[in-house]
Image (cartoon, rainbow, N blue to C red; front, side, top):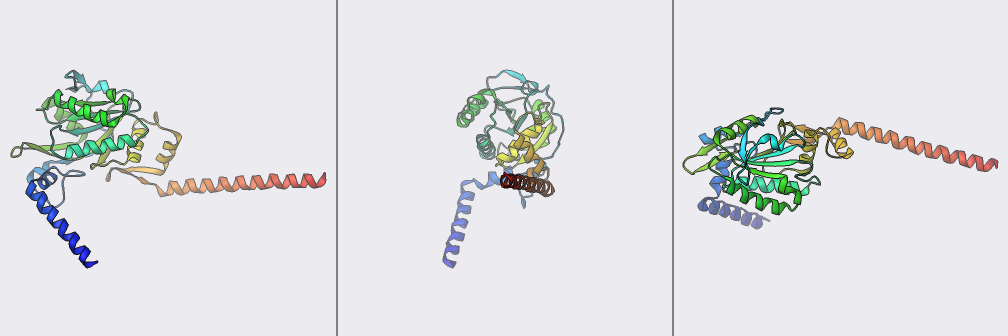
Length: 286
């Protein structure tokens, strides 16, 4: 056991050294995780990075961006009927943005809901230097990997001017900073769910988004217009925690449901036994 632990520690140490030497460790530290700032790294640029929750804040739907084809589009074109998942990334990001999009892709694959049918996905670059060509390349890759035909009209990749980008990111509380030395952005990782009217409904942090949480977030944002009675039952048992960006179980509601189910089961059992006893008595009299 000691020899195994020693070997494991040696491999971990060697891996960290290699990551540092290859320059792969610094982007992880620089770009940050979860709600923005990795612990123990007080770099000044990271103090300007994070996600400030602005639940129920209105996104300015008059903002104009460019879609993958280069067409000028107002955000309102994507709202009105269905909830919207918003991911803020930049397309030439060397690491974290790809992890965010890959995590979102995995969650979308696990959902029975489909982008373009029950909801819309907006991926917006916060780098004003990027244009429709990069957006189109990203869309081709992710729509192909998603593998559902509706995604062509349900998952959009946008680019825009600095003013529009700033207004959008400020509206949802997404803070990022440009590092002139590396030519890259320091930024947080997470996605947001918006209502059909463009209000911020839910935040999900990190690079992995539990499909159950994402589904419940979409159902709540749509105010029950999508989903099933089972989803409504789950929403009775689970509560969104803004601090963690996750749904946690409401014990009291679960106990109430369990109690009601127990009473119903006992009542059904007693009714069946009562009817059976009556049939026996009738058979004896006959």
